[in-house]
Length: 470
Ligand SMILES: Nc1ncnc2c1ncn2[C@@H]1O[C@H](COP(=O)(O)OP(=O)(O)OP(=O)(O)O)[C@@H](O)[C@H]1O
Ligand SMILES: [Mg+2]
Image 1 (cartoon, rainbow, N blue to C red):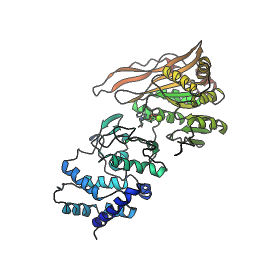
Image 2 (tube, protein in one colour):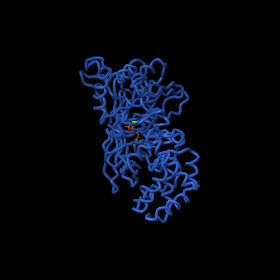
Image 3 (cartoon, protein in one colour):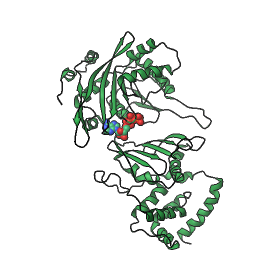
Image 4 (cartoon, helix red, strand yellow):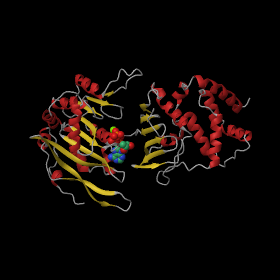
């Protein structure tokens, strides 16, 4: 019996079984991996999947009809190594179907489906792609060089997207179905995945993947990208070394976690660092790092461990530094209290559009802790705890920039006094639409400058006063 005949008879058996049991084959899922493909240069070709012809799509769909997803590793291996004869046999059996000239891409797609993450596999393998977004089966966006664009990649239908999703979540012991239609997960390479499916997602199963970079950006990379200048890099390094409490604020995807990682890299190797995150993204090089991660509730809706629980627990772990991935709720109160009671040098991020907005949001977050504190008391906490806010933005041209480095100077009456130390100044737009500009000093020397000096950290005071002409 030929391999194709065996597949066909197995497929029929599987179809019968499928009706009663739709659990995906764990073993194959465990084996899901990225298969290397040739990736063309990002400079010359934005996305390498060309628009498929009708004949191509027809033949591909037919092949997939023969090859059903549930099978064991051995068969998958056999199919992958014998694709040429399988395609030939299928063509011979189906007279109405036209052959296509080049099978390379077709075979790649089949391989991706059987052993990888389906049609998005090449995007996941391409290091220049930083984000992948699947909005239902017919729309896949990808981000490269800070620019988001629609790709020609398509899934066959909702079930095809669901099959890839199951491959992603099942190895983690998680599931995604109507009863739990939202899930946060991670790929084996550490990339962060969020999925939401119908009936909540109207486009069809929707997947958002933030690629994990194997080599995290360093301060030199950020200077090279123009996110900040060399002088400002020296300044934020000194600020971390002087144990200032620093908050990185910015919009979604503006580069907060990346900047937090860079800030954390300046922490002394002698310090005991506790990191707290929803999905571990930070990559610290120090010796003494304890990484904590939250846990979602189980199927009965119990057992969730929140960022707040972890912040509270971390205080009993004798940390020198607490690094919180993202503050968005009641944990703000615990964090501020920790910062105010000797845990100097703590770092965190939060969503907001400006430093002023960030402090306002922190007030709201503190209220979410459920303690009915008067506004004045909350502001005292915020003003006493925070030293510096670093505002990050993704500009229209796709670049990520630090737009403000702002000192939290204290409380005057009922108002938290904020003072920009450096501010982004735009001087124009070049012919490619790229924004030209730089972070420049405002001329104000921060109040904590003396504190830095006392810690033995010397920065030339000229970096605060030198007006850079651009
Ligand atoms: N300074 C930068 N220059 C260029 N690209 C950057 C920069 N910082 C981050 N990136 C890229 O932008 C993407 C988003 O970065 P990051 O995860 O740090 O953002 P975020 O603000 O933490 O996002 P979220 O709000 O989803 O948590 C990543 O792909 C990252 O590689
Ligand atoms: Mg982040």
